[in-house]
Length: 229
Ligand SMILES: Cc1cc2nc3c(=O)[nH]c(=O)nc-3n(C[C@H](O)[C@H](O)[C@H](O)COP(=O)(O)OP(=O)(O)OC[C@H]3O[C@@H](n4cnc5c(N)ncnc54)[C@H](O)[C@@H]3O)c2cc1C
Image 1 (cartoon, rainbow, N blue to C red):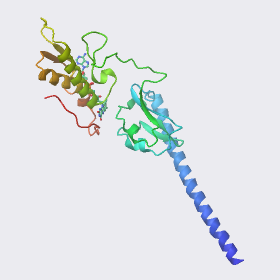
Image 2: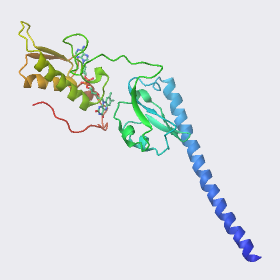
Image 3: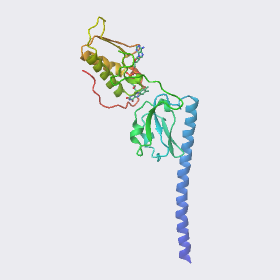
Image 4: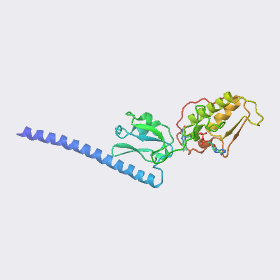
């Protein structure tokens, strides 16, 4: 009789402990969801919820709430976890590191430009970065492709192609005019120098483009790249 009572007490204790753990977990999840929901509402009021350019799109059927995307993102509050699923918060602040995409173990994230509500007009360029306006090339952020590394590579390739295809003699003062001295423009200018093109670089502000205006102590996510010369 005594051992049966003891057994009931043990099983009851274990069951109570399990219920307590689940309760604490659900309460924590509810509290975190509420915080994320408040941030989403604030983002909506400030017009930051709707993405303007590259941003993560989450397939909630594949999301298993590991939170890896949230930890991987070097920016703050682009993604959060609400009701057990990842969701975007300040999507328009996404600058396209792509870290969330790589971190997700279930491939629930895709990186997209534009949304159903807000389309993004991108210039039409061919594989040499020449636009449909003959002789005008676009590289870097303006072409819709963020990130320093991409801008550097595109600036370099655009000028490599100009050097290759535009060898016709002309009477103009310059072979090439580069507008903007951000990563794309600097890379384009160095490539132009490498090919002995007669060029000038016009900058309305400061050398370095957006990078020059990064907030202090910002973590810059990038990888090794080759600058011409
Ligand atoms: C807050 C923030 C954080 C970021 N963090 C990262 C990061 O960690 N890692 C990363 O890889 N990328 C990051 N990026 C993105 C990165 O900065 C850009 O992708 C990159 O600077 C693009 O280079 P770009 O040369 O194409 O353009 P920009 O850097 O924008 O340079 C364009 C230049 O052109 C000039 N210009 C524009 N119009 C004219 C005109 N009419 N006449 C003369 N000059 C003109 C501008 O003044 C500017 O200097 C971040 C962006 C932001 C906003």
